[in-house]
Length: 513
Image 1 (cartoon, rainbow, N blue to C red):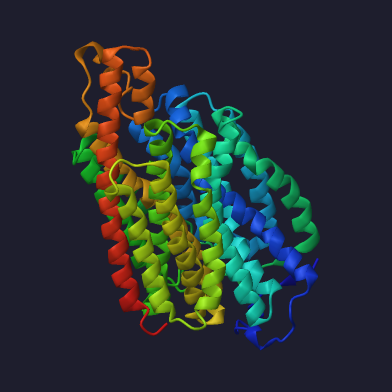
Image 2: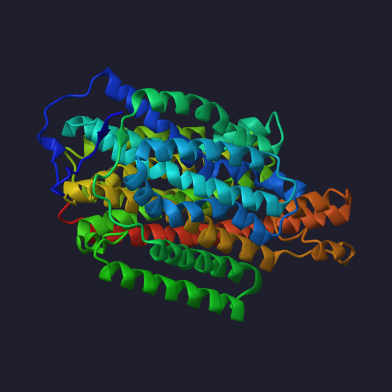
Protein backbone atom coordinates (compact mmCIF):
# COMPACT_ATOMS: atom_id res chain seq x y z
CA UNK A 1 0.00 0.00 0.00
CA UNK A 2 1.46 3.35 -1.06
CA UNK A 3 1.33 6.30 1.31
CA UNK A 4 1.80 9.80 -0.08
CA UNK A 5 1.46 13.28 1.33
CA UNK A 6 2.16 16.88 0.42
CA UNK A 7 4.63 17.15 3.32
CA UNK A 8 7.89 15.27 3.16
CA UNK A 9 9.44 13.67 6.26
CA UNK A 10 11.84 16.51 7.01
CA UNK A 11 8.84 18.83 7.51
CA UNK A 12 9.42 21.03 4.45
CA UNK A 13 6.56 21.84 2.14
CA UNK A 14 6.51 20.09 -1.18
CA UNK A 15 5.05 22.46 -3.77
CA UNK A 16 3.13 20.19 -6.05
CA UNK A 17 2.50 23.05 -8.45
CA UNK A 18 6.02 22.46 -9.77
CA UNK A 19 4.92 19.08 -11.15
CA UNK A 20 3.76 19.22 -14.75
CA UNK A 21 2.17 15.77 -14.88
CA UNK A 22 -1.40 16.16 -16.09
CA UNK A 23 -4.17 14.04 -14.67
CA UNK A 24 -5.25 10.96 -16.58
CA UNK A 25 -8.35 8.81 -16.51
CA UNK A 26 -7.40 7.16 -13.21
CA UNK A 27 -7.05 10.53 -11.46
CA UNK A 28 -10.40 11.78 -12.74
CA UNK A 29 -11.99 8.46 -11.72
CA UNK A 30 -10.54 9.00 -8.24
CA UNK A 31 -12.13 12.47 -8.19
CA UNK A 32 -15.49 10.89 -9.01
CA UNK A 33 -15.03 8.58 -6.01
CA UNK A 34 -14.15 11.52 -3.75
CA UNK A 35 -17.33 13.29 -4.79
CA UNK A 36 -19.44 10.48 -3.31
CA UNK A 37 -18.74 11.34 0.37
CA UNK A 38 -19.08 15.05 -0.44
CA UNK A 39 -22.48 14.37 -2.01
CA UNK A 40 -23.55 12.21 0.92
CA UNK A 41 -22.63 14.73 3.60
CA UNK A 42 -24.03 17.76 1.78
CA UNK A 43 -27.31 16.04 0.86
CA UNK A 44 -27.81 15.05 4.48
CA UNK A 45 -27.43 18.71 5.47
CA UNK A 46 -30.68 19.61 3.73
CA UNK A 47 -32.54 16.39 2.90
CA UNK A 48 -34.81 16.75 5.93
CA UNK A 49 -36.19 20.09 4.73
CA UNK A 50 -39.16 18.57 2.94
CA UNK A 51 -39.65 15.87 5.55
CA UNK A 52 -40.23 18.41 8.35
CA UNK A 53 -44.03 18.56 7.93
CA UNK A 54 -44.30 14.75 8.02
CA UNK A 55 -41.96 14.51 11.01
CA UNK A 56 -44.01 17.18 12.80
CA UNK A 57 -47.14 15.07 12.35
CA UNK A 58 -45.64 11.62 12.98
CA UNK A 59 -43.21 12.22 15.86
CA UNK A 60 -44.80 15.43 17.21
CA UNK A 61 -41.57 17.21 18.19
CA UNK A 62 -41.63 20.61 19.85
CA UNK A 63 -40.59 23.60 17.77
CA UNK A 64 -37.17 23.60 19.42
CA UNK A 65 -36.75 19.85 18.89
CA UNK A 66 -37.59 20.32 15.22
CA UNK A 67 -34.82 22.89 14.86
CA UNK A 68 -32.38 20.58 16.68
CA UNK A 69 -33.32 17.65 14.45
CA UNK A 70 -32.20 19.76 11.50
CA UNK A 71 -29.13 21.29 13.15
CA UNK A 72 -27.59 18.63 15.40
CA UNK A 73 -26.04 16.88 12.41
CA UNK A 74 -24.29 20.03 11.22
CA UNK A 75 -23.28 21.01 14.78
CA UNK A 76 -21.43 17.73 15.30
CA UNK A 77 -19.82 18.06 11.88
CA UNK A 78 -18.61 21.57 12.64
CA UNK A 79 -17.35 20.62 16.09
CA UNK A 80 -15.45 17.52 14.97
CA UNK A 81 -14.19 18.23 11.43
CA UNK A 82 -10.82 19.62 12.43
CA UNK A 83 -10.37 16.94 15.11
CA UNK A 84 -11.15 14.21 12.59
CA UNK A 85 -8.71 15.84 10.20
CA UNK A 86 -6.02 15.43 12.84
CA UNK A 87 -6.98 11.78 13.35
CA UNK A 88 -6.83 11.21 9.60
CA UNK A 89 -3.36 12.75 9.47
CA UNK A 90 -2.23 10.23 12.08
CA UNK A 91 -3.97 7.01 11.03
CA UNK A 92 -4.60 7.49 7.32
CA UNK A 93 -7.19 9.59 5.49
CA UNK A 94 -8.49 6.80 3.30
CA UNK A 95 -8.80 4.51 6.32
CA UNK A 96 -10.78 7.16 8.21
CA UNK A 97 -12.94 7.71 5.12
CA UNK A 98 -13.85 4.02 4.99
CA UNK A 99 -14.59 3.77 8.74
CA UNK A 100 -16.80 6.85 8.52
CA UNK A 101 -18.64 5.48 5.50
CA UNK A 102 -19.68 2.28 7.27
CA UNK A 103 -20.68 4.16 10.43
CA UNK A 104 -22.64 6.68 8.39
CA UNK A 105 -24.62 3.87 6.83
CA UNK A 106 -25.52 2.38 10.20
CA UNK A 107 -26.61 5.77 11.59
CA UNK A 108 -28.73 6.35 8.46
CA UNK A 109 -30.66 3.13 9.10
CA UNK A 110 -31.21 4.12 12.72
CA UNK A 111 -32.56 7.52 11.62
CA UNK A 112 -34.87 5.98 9.02
CA UNK A 113 -36.65 3.87 11.62
CA UNK A 114 -36.77 6.43 14.45
CA UNK A 115 -39.88 6.13 16.61
CA UNK A 116 -39.53 9.33 18.65
CA UNK A 117 -37.96 12.81 18.43
CA UNK A 118 -35.28 11.67 20.89
CA UNK A 119 -34.36 8.66 18.75
CA UNK A 120 -34.12 10.81 15.64
CA UNK A 121 -31.96 13.33 17.51
CA UNK A 122 -29.61 10.54 18.60
CA UNK A 123 -29.41 9.30 15.01
CA UNK A 124 -28.60 12.77 13.72
CA UNK A 125 -25.90 13.03 16.40
CA UNK A 126 -24.26 9.83 15.14
CA UNK A 127 -24.60 10.95 11.50
CA UNK A 128 -22.73 14.12 12.42
CA UNK A 129 -19.94 12.21 14.18
CA UNK A 130 -19.38 9.80 11.29
CA UNK A 131 -19.92 12.54 8.71
CA UNK A 132 -17.03 14.44 10.28
CA UNK A 133 -14.75 11.52 9.43
CA UNK A 134 -15.64 11.78 5.73
CA UNK A 135 -15.06 15.41 4.83
CA UNK A 136 -11.46 16.16 5.93
CA UNK A 137 -10.13 13.43 3.65
CA UNK A 138 -11.60 14.78 0.42
CA UNK A 139 -9.65 17.99 -0.20
CA UNK A 140 -6.44 16.50 1.22
CA UNK A 141 -6.68 13.52 -1.12
CA UNK A 142 -7.48 15.82 -4.05
CA UNK A 143 -4.18 17.60 -3.46
CA UNK A 144 -2.36 14.27 -3.51
CA UNK A 145 -4.10 12.96 -6.61
CA UNK A 146 -3.88 16.12 -8.78
CA UNK A 147 -0.34 17.47 -9.20
CA UNK A 148 -0.94 19.97 -11.98
CA UNK A 149 -2.31 23.32 -10.78
CA UNK A 150 -4.85 23.57 -13.61
CA UNK A 151 -6.22 20.10 -12.94
CA UNK A 152 -6.32 20.71 -9.22
CA UNK A 153 -8.21 23.99 -9.67
CA UNK A 154 -10.89 22.25 -11.71
CA UNK A 155 -11.04 19.43 -9.15
CA UNK A 156 -11.55 21.92 -6.32
CA UNK A 157 -14.23 23.70 -8.36
CA UNK A 158 -15.95 20.34 -8.82
CA UNK A 159 -15.71 19.71 -5.06
CA UNK A 160 -17.32 23.08 -4.27
CA UNK A 161 -20.03 22.62 -6.91
CA UNK A 162 -20.81 19.16 -5.60
CA UNK A 163 -21.11 20.42 -2.04
CA UNK A 164 -23.42 23.35 -2.83
CA UNK A 165 -25.25 21.34 -5.49
CA UNK A 166 -25.69 18.44 -3.08
CA UNK A 167 -27.15 20.79 -0.48
CA UNK A 168 -29.72 21.91 -3.04
CA UNK A 169 -30.25 18.37 -4.35
CA UNK A 170 -31.21 17.07 -0.89
CA UNK A 171 -34.74 18.51 -0.91
CA UNK A 172 -35.33 17.35 -4.49
CA UNK A 173 -34.40 13.75 -3.73
CA UNK A 174 -36.22 13.94 -0.43
CA UNK A 175 -39.33 15.31 -2.12
CA UNK A 176 -39.40 12.45 -4.62
CA UNK A 177 -39.01 9.85 -1.86
CA UNK A 178 -41.68 11.52 0.28
CA UNK A 179 -44.04 11.37 -2.67
CA UNK A 180 -43.72 7.58 -2.73
CA UNK A 181 -42.63 6.44 0.74
CA UNK A 182 -42.62 7.47 4.42
CA UNK A 183 -40.42 10.26 5.75
CA UNK A 184 -37.69 7.89 6.98
CA UNK A 185 -36.98 6.92 3.37
CA UNK A 186 -34.99 10.13 2.88
CA UNK A 187 -32.13 8.50 4.79
CA UNK A 188 -31.93 5.64 2.31
CA UNK A 189 -30.39 8.05 -0.21
CA UNK A 190 -27.08 7.14 1.45
CA UNK A 191 -27.34 3.38 0.87
CA UNK A 192 -26.42 3.17 -2.85
CA UNK A 193 -23.68 5.78 -2.34
CA UNK A 194 -22.13 3.74 0.49
CA UNK A 195 -22.35 0.49 -1.48
CA UNK A 196 -20.42 2.09 -4.35
CA UNK A 197 -17.98 4.12 -2.24
CA UNK A 198 -16.29 1.37 -0.20
CA UNK A 199 -14.96 -0.84 -3.03
CA UNK A 200 -14.16 2.11 -5.31
CA UNK A 201 -12.20 3.88 -2.57
CA UNK A 202 -10.13 0.75 -1.94
CA UNK A 203 -9.45 0.43 -5.68
CA UNK A 204 -8.78 4.03 -6.74
CA UNK A 205 -7.78 6.16 -3.75
CA UNK A 206 -4.21 6.17 -2.43
CA UNK A 207 -3.64 6.07 1.31
CA UNK A 208 -2.44 9.43 2.62
CA UNK A 209 -1.17 10.56 6.01
CA UNK A 210 1.11 13.14 7.57
CA UNK A 211 4.51 11.50 8.26
CA UNK A 212 5.07 13.78 11.26
CA UNK A 213 1.67 14.62 12.75
CA UNK A 214 1.33 16.72 15.87
CA UNK A 215 -0.23 15.30 19.03
CA UNK A 216 -4.00 14.93 19.14
CA UNK A 217 -5.29 17.80 21.31
CA UNK A 218 -8.27 16.28 23.16
CA UNK A 219 -8.88 19.36 25.37
CA UNK A 220 -9.13 21.53 22.24
CA UNK A 221 -11.63 19.11 20.72
CA UNK A 222 -13.72 19.28 23.87
CA UNK A 223 -13.57 23.06 23.99
CA UNK A 224 -14.70 23.35 20.36
CA UNK A 225 -17.81 21.31 21.13
CA UNK A 226 -18.50 23.18 24.38
CA UNK A 227 -18.20 26.46 22.48
CA UNK A 228 -20.70 25.45 19.79
CA UNK A 229 -23.40 23.41 21.52
CA UNK A 230 -24.41 25.89 24.26
CA UNK A 231 -24.25 28.83 21.85
CA UNK A 232 -26.60 27.24 19.33
CA UNK A 233 -28.84 26.01 22.16
CA UNK A 234 -29.07 29.59 23.47
CA UNK A 235 -30.02 30.93 20.04
CA UNK A 236 -32.75 28.31 19.72
CA UNK A 237 -33.96 28.77 23.30
CA UNK A 238 -34.61 32.46 22.61
CA UNK A 239 -37.28 31.41 20.10
CA UNK A 240 -39.18 29.42 22.73
CA UNK A 241 -38.58 31.19 26.05
CA UNK A 242 -36.85 34.50 25.32
CA UNK A 243 -33.80 35.76 27.24
CA UNK A 244 -34.17 33.52 30.27
CA UNK A 245 -31.47 32.77 32.83
CA UNK A 246 -30.80 29.45 31.08
CA UNK A 247 -30.34 31.21 27.75
CA UNK A 248 -27.87 33.71 29.22
CA UNK A 249 -25.94 30.95 31.00
CA UNK A 250 -25.69 28.97 27.75
CA UNK A 251 -24.39 32.05 25.91
CA UNK A 252 -21.83 32.64 28.68
CA UNK A 253 -20.62 29.02 28.60
CA UNK A 254 -20.28 29.04 24.81
CA UNK A 255 -18.42 32.35 24.71
CA UNK A 256 -16.18 31.32 27.59
CA UNK A 257 -15.29 28.02 25.93
CA UNK A 258 -14.60 29.83 22.65
CA UNK A 259 -12.24 32.25 24.40
CA UNK A 260 -10.46 29.35 26.14
CA UNK A 261 -10.14 27.48 22.83
CA UNK A 262 -8.57 30.45 21.04
CA UNK A 263 -6.19 31.02 23.96
CA UNK A 264 -5.11 27.37 23.95
CA UNK A 265 -4.59 27.33 20.19
CA UNK A 266 -2.46 30.47 20.30
CA UNK A 267 -0.20 29.01 22.99
CA UNK A 268 0.10 25.48 21.60
CA UNK A 269 3.33 24.47 19.86
CA UNK A 270 1.33 22.33 17.41
CA UNK A 271 -2.22 23.74 17.44
CA UNK A 272 -5.20 21.85 16.07
CA UNK A 273 -6.10 25.06 14.19
CA UNK A 274 -3.33 27.37 12.96
CA UNK A 275 -4.64 30.74 14.14
CA UNK A 276 -2.03 32.65 12.11
CA UNK A 277 -4.03 31.84 8.98
CA UNK A 278 -6.68 34.33 10.06
CA UNK A 279 -4.19 37.21 9.89
CA UNK A 280 -4.49 36.95 6.10
CA UNK A 281 -7.38 39.25 5.12
CA UNK A 282 -8.16 37.35 1.93
CA UNK A 283 -8.30 34.04 3.81
CA UNK A 284 -10.49 35.46 6.58
CA UNK A 285 -12.78 37.23 4.13
CA UNK A 286 -13.20 34.07 2.05
CA UNK A 287 -14.03 32.01 5.16
CA UNK A 288 -16.68 34.52 6.30
CA UNK A 289 -18.20 34.64 2.81
CA UNK A 290 -18.19 30.84 2.68
CA UNK A 291 -20.05 30.58 5.97
CA UNK A 292 -22.65 33.22 5.17
CA UNK A 293 -23.49 31.78 1.75
CA UNK A 294 -24.42 28.42 3.33
CA UNK A 295 -26.34 30.27 6.04
CA UNK A 296 -28.51 31.90 3.39
CA UNK A 297 -29.09 28.61 1.56
CA UNK A 298 -30.15 26.51 4.56
CA UNK A 299 -32.31 29.31 5.96
CA UNK A 300 -34.19 29.54 2.67
CA UNK A 301 -34.67 25.77 2.47
CA UNK A 302 -36.03 25.68 6.03
CA UNK A 303 -38.75 28.22 5.29
CA UNK A 304 -39.26 27.38 1.62
CA UNK A 305 -40.06 23.71 2.20
CA UNK A 306 -42.80 24.54 4.68
CA UNK A 307 -44.09 27.45 2.61
CA UNK A 308 -44.51 25.33 -0.52
CA UNK A 309 -46.18 22.39 1.21
CA UNK A 310 -48.14 23.81 4.12
CA UNK A 311 -49.12 27.23 2.77
CA UNK A 312 -49.35 26.63 -0.98
CA UNK A 313 -50.52 23.05 -0.54
CA UNK A 314 -48.05 21.26 -2.84
CA UNK A 315 -47.07 17.65 -2.41
CA UNK A 316 -43.51 16.94 -1.30
CA UNK A 317 -42.52 15.93 -4.84
CA UNK A 318 -44.11 18.94 -6.51
CA UNK A 319 -42.50 21.23 -3.95
CA UNK A 320 -39.10 19.67 -4.64
CA UNK A 321 -39.53 20.21 -8.39
CA UNK A 322 -40.05 23.91 -7.77
CA UNK A 323 -36.46 24.04 -6.49
CA UNK A 324 -34.99 22.10 -9.43
CA UNK A 325 -34.08 25.22 -11.50
CA UNK A 326 -32.27 26.62 -8.48
CA UNK A 327 -30.33 23.37 -8.12
CA UNK A 328 -29.20 23.54 -11.74
CA UNK A 329 -28.28 27.21 -11.35
CA UNK A 330 -26.13 26.45 -8.28
CA UNK A 331 -24.07 23.80 -10.05
CA UNK A 332 -23.71 25.67 -13.35
CA UNK A 333 -22.77 28.94 -11.64
CA UNK A 334 -19.92 27.22 -9.81
CA UNK A 335 -18.28 26.08 -13.04
CA UNK A 336 -19.01 29.34 -14.83
CA UNK A 337 -17.24 31.15 -11.99
CA UNK A 338 -14.01 29.30 -12.82
CA UNK A 339 -14.07 30.94 -16.27
CA UNK A 340 -15.39 34.33 -15.19
CA UNK A 341 -12.68 34.84 -12.57
CA UNK A 342 -10.10 34.89 -15.38
CA UNK A 343 -11.57 38.15 -16.72
CA UNK A 344 -13.56 39.59 -13.78
CA UNK A 345 -11.96 40.30 -10.37
CA UNK A 346 -12.87 37.72 -7.74
CA UNK A 347 -13.69 40.55 -5.36
CA UNK A 348 -16.45 41.78 -7.67
CA UNK A 349 -17.86 38.32 -8.34
CA UNK A 350 -18.07 37.32 -4.66
CA UNK A 351 -19.68 40.64 -3.74
CA UNK A 352 -22.19 40.24 -6.58
CA UNK A 353 -23.00 36.71 -5.38
CA UNK A 354 -24.27 38.09 -2.07
CA UNK A 355 -26.32 40.73 -3.83
CA UNK A 356 -27.93 37.84 -5.74
CA UNK A 357 -28.70 36.05 -2.46
CA UNK A 358 -30.27 39.21 -1.04
CA UNK A 359 -32.31 39.60 -4.23
CA UNK A 360 -33.63 36.04 -3.88
CA UNK A 361 -34.90 36.73 -0.37
CA UNK A 362 -36.32 40.07 -1.49
CA UNK A 363 -38.37 38.34 -4.18
CA UNK A 364 -39.75 35.95 -1.56
CA UNK A 365 -40.71 38.68 0.90
CA UNK A 366 -41.81 41.61 -1.24
CA UNK A 367 -43.67 40.18 -4.21
CA UNK A 368 -46.90 39.91 -2.22
CA UNK A 369 -48.56 36.56 -1.71
CA UNK A 370 -45.91 33.89 -2.44
CA UNK A 371 -46.53 31.73 -5.48
CA UNK A 372 -44.83 28.69 -6.97
CA UNK A 373 -43.28 30.87 -9.67
CA UNK A 374 -42.00 33.53 -7.27
CA UNK A 375 -40.35 30.93 -5.03
CA UNK A 376 -38.76 29.14 -8.01
CA UNK A 377 -37.39 32.43 -9.35
CA UNK A 378 -36.15 33.46 -5.90
CA UNK A 379 -34.28 30.19 -5.37
CA UNK A 380 -32.79 30.30 -8.87
CA UNK A 381 -31.42 33.81 -8.32
CA UNK A 382 -30.10 32.73 -4.93
CA UNK A 383 -28.60 29.55 -6.44
CA UNK A 384 -26.57 31.58 -8.93
CA UNK A 385 -25.09 33.59 -6.08
CA UNK A 386 -24.40 30.58 -3.85
CA UNK A 387 -22.79 28.55 -6.64
CA UNK A 388 -20.41 31.39 -7.48
CA UNK A 389 -19.60 32.16 -3.85
CA UNK A 390 -18.80 28.58 -2.85
CA UNK A 391 -16.44 27.94 -5.77
CA UNK A 392 -14.62 31.26 -5.57
CA UNK A 393 -14.23 31.40 -1.80
CA UNK A 394 -12.71 27.92 -1.69
CA UNK A 395 -10.27 28.81 -4.45
CA UNK A 396 -9.36 32.09 -2.76
CA UNK A 397 -8.92 30.44 0.59
CA UNK A 398 -6.58 27.70 -0.65
CA UNK A 399 -4.58 30.00 -2.91
CA UNK A 400 -4.09 32.63 -0.19
CA UNK A 401 -2.12 30.33 2.14
CA UNK A 402 1.18 28.46 1.68
CA UNK A 403 0.89 24.95 0.29
CA UNK A 404 2.15 23.56 3.61
CA UNK A 405 -0.95 25.05 5.29
CA UNK A 406 -3.46 23.71 2.77
CA UNK A 407 -4.64 20.88 5.02
CA UNK A 408 -5.45 23.21 7.92
CA UNK A 409 -7.08 25.69 5.54
CA UNK A 410 -9.27 22.93 4.08
CA UNK A 411 -10.44 21.83 7.53
CA UNK A 412 -11.33 25.41 8.46
CA UNK A 413 -13.24 25.81 5.20
CA UNK A 414 -15.27 22.67 5.79
CA UNK A 415 -16.00 23.80 9.35
CA UNK A 416 -17.25 27.13 7.99
CA UNK A 417 -19.61 25.23 5.68
CA UNK A 418 -21.16 23.42 8.62
CA UNK A 419 -21.32 26.44 10.93
CA UNK A 420 -23.10 28.28 8.13
CA UNK A 421 -25.57 25.40 7.82
CA UNK A 422 -26.16 25.50 11.59
CA UNK A 423 -26.66 29.26 11.71
CA UNK A 424 -29.02 29.17 8.73
CA UNK A 425 -31.64 27.31 10.75
CA UNK A 426 -30.50 28.46 14.21
CA UNK A 427 -30.73 32.19 13.44
CA UNK A 428 -33.11 32.47 10.48
CA UNK A 429 -35.15 29.48 11.66
CA UNK A 430 -35.46 31.07 15.09
CA UNK A 431 -36.75 34.32 13.56
CA UNK A 432 -39.34 32.32 11.61
CA UNK A 433 -40.41 30.16 14.56
CA UNK A 434 -40.61 32.95 17.13
CA UNK A 435 -42.58 35.22 14.76
CA UNK A 436 -44.99 32.38 13.96
CA UNK A 437 -45.62 31.62 17.62
CA UNK A 438 -46.03 35.29 18.56
CA UNK A 439 -48.69 35.98 15.91
CA UNK A 440 -50.63 32.70 15.89
CA UNK A 441 -54.10 32.91 17.44
CA UNK A 442 -56.47 30.00 17.97
CA UNK A 443 -60.05 29.62 19.22
CA UNK A 444 -60.82 28.66 22.81
CA UNK A 445 -62.13 25.24 21.76
CA UNK A 446 -58.61 24.36 20.58
CA UNK A 447 -56.85 25.39 23.79
CA UNK A 448 -55.95 21.81 24.73
CA UNK A 449 -53.73 21.59 21.68
CA UNK A 450 -51.38 24.12 23.22
CA UNK A 451 -50.48 21.75 26.05
CA UNK A 452 -49.70 19.02 23.51
CA UNK A 453 -47.33 21.23 21.52
CA UNK A 454 -49.59 21.16 18.46
CA UNK A 455 -49.17 24.88 17.79
CA UNK A 456 -45.37 25.09 18.04
CA UNK A 457 -44.88 24.38 14.32
CA UNK A 458 -46.93 25.09 11.22
CA UNK A 459 -47.07 21.35 10.43
CA UNK A 460 -48.47 20.57 13.88
CA UNK A 461 -51.08 23.31 13.61
CA UNK A 462 -52.23 22.16 10.16
CA UNK A 463 -52.57 18.60 11.45
CA UNK A 464 -54.53 19.77 14.52
CA UNK A 465 -56.85 21.87 12.34
CA UNK A 466 -57.76 18.78 10.31
CA UNK A 467 -59.70 17.49 13.34
CA UNK A 468 -62.00 20.52 13.05
CA UNK A 469 -63.40 20.47 9.47
CA UNK A 470 -65.55 23.50 10.17
CA UNK A 471 -65.23 27.19 10.90
CA UNK A 472 -62.92 26.51 13.87
CA UNK A 473 -60.44 24.66 11.66
CA UNK A 474 -60.70 27.24 8.91
CA UNK A 475 -59.97 30.11 11.28
CA UNK A 476 -57.06 28.22 12.79
CA UNK A 477 -55.56 27.54 9.35
CA UNK A 478 -56.05 31.15 8.28
CA UNK A 479 -54.31 32.40 11.42
CA UNK A 480 -51.47 29.86 11.06
CA UNK A 481 -50.78 30.72 7.43
CA UNK A 482 -50.96 34.43 8.12
CA UNK A 483 -48.54 34.09 11.04
CA UNK A 484 -46.18 31.96 8.95
CA UNK A 485 -46.29 34.43 6.06
CA UNK A 486 -45.33 37.22 8.45
CA UNK A 487 -42.52 35.00 9.74
CA UNK A 488 -41.29 34.54 6.16
CA UNK A 489 -41.19 38.30 5.68
CA UNK A 490 -39.27 38.91 8.90
CA UNK A 491 -36.88 36.06 8.15
CA UNK A 492 -36.28 37.35 4.63
CA UNK A 493 -35.61 40.84 5.97
CA UNK A 494 -33.01 39.44 8.39
CA UNK A 495 -31.42 37.39 5.59
CA UNK A 496 -31.24 40.43 3.29
CA UNK A 497 -29.42 42.43 5.97
CA UNK A 498 -26.96 39.55 6.51
CA UNK A 499 -26.35 39.11 2.77
CA UNK A 500 -25.74 42.81 2.16
CA UNK A 501 -23.41 42.99 5.16
CA UNK A 502 -21.53 40.00 3.72
CA UNK A 503 -21.26 41.82 0.38
CA UNK A 504 -19.64 44.78 2.13
CA UNK A 505 -17.25 42.51 4.05
CA UNK A 506 -16.29 40.68 0.84
CA UNK A 507 -15.67 43.92 -1.02
CA UNK A 508 -13.35 45.18 1.72
CA UNK A 509 -11.44 42.01 2.61
CA UNK A 510 -10.96 40.65 -0.92
CA UNK A 511 -9.43 43.84 -2.26
CA UNK A 512 -6.11 42.13 -3.01
CA UNK A 513 -7.53 38.75 -4.00
